[in-house]
Every structure is written in structure tokens, then in C-alpha cells.
Image 1 (cartoon, rainbow, N blue to C red):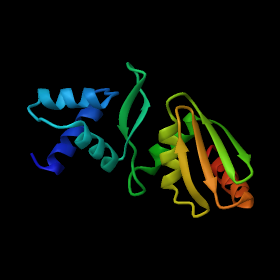
Image 2: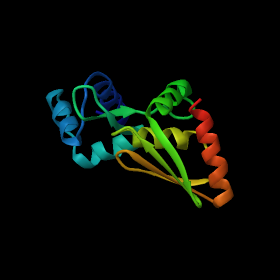
Image 3: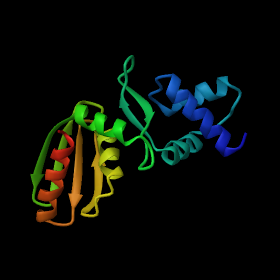
Length: 149
């Protein structure tokens, strides 16, 4: 099976089934007759922009975050629901989220393509946003607060 078909199959799986580990994905794909390695799945996850977010029946699940050309309204709704606090600390912004939602919130921030942001780093319930300087951090934090309204 070629890469695009494999990735399409992977997207169908994470859309229909709550999968929270790469090993689980490999087992499901193997059950469908496709032998893949963990390294291949890892690359596919990165290329497809899959993230881990809170699940309904499992603690976490893989999900697709829509890119800048995708459904921005869904990203912003997720942002509004998941963000708990936004705090500046010099050129850093700490965004606290509901448990398991930091990756999705970071992806939402990244999708905004704010030039003053050097990068984001997501944990389980915290996103660290690094900006070019203190003034930029204050402005970006204000912009992020505006997304909550």
C-alpha cells in the first residue's frame, strides 16, 4: 500500500475509533491487513498533524487538528473551551488548559501564524509560548485573551 492510502486509512481509524497509542494504531492496521512499523506510524502522525487530546472513553486519543486552511471555527471553539488561564512572564506566555488539551491549544496558537511567536511547547495541561520580547508577549497575550471572547 502506498503512503497516501496508508495515511488515509490512518485518518479514518482515528476519526472512527479512540486510539491513544501508536501500538494500538499498529494493531488496528495489522488487523486490516497492513503491516507497518512504529517509525512509519510516528512519521505519519507528524505529517498528518495528529495530536493527542482528551478522549471520551479513554484518557487520551489521537485527533486531527485542522491546519490554517481547515476549519478555523472548530479550532477557535476548542480554544475557548480548553483554555483556563493565560499569563505573561517576561517574553513567555503560560497558557493553562484543561487536562489533555495543551497540544490542541498549541496547534491552534500555531495556526494563527503570529510573527512575534518564536514557538510553542505543549505538555499535558500547559502550553509555553515563547515570543521575541516582553512587549510582544504582552501583545500576544492580549490577542489570545481576545480569542476567548
